[in-house]
Image (cartoon, rainbow, N blue to C red; front, side, top):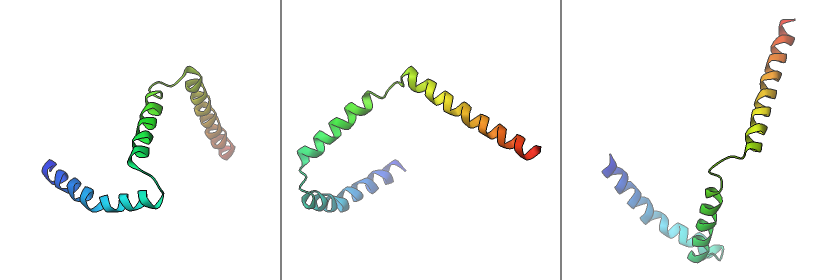
Length: 79
């Protein structure tokens, strides 16, 4: 299976390389810009490793509001 995935990846690279080059040329993007984009993305996602306490509290609050809404809807249908 790994061998098949390898050959499939090689085929995709071979057939899509021309498509990627065409799109880059169409939008005036060079490989250096792609490298910069990738580095920016890596830096961005590396800062998202841990959620802040404020985010965790906000998420918990929203989840509790959703549970409350669900309970209220159930009670409205039973009364």
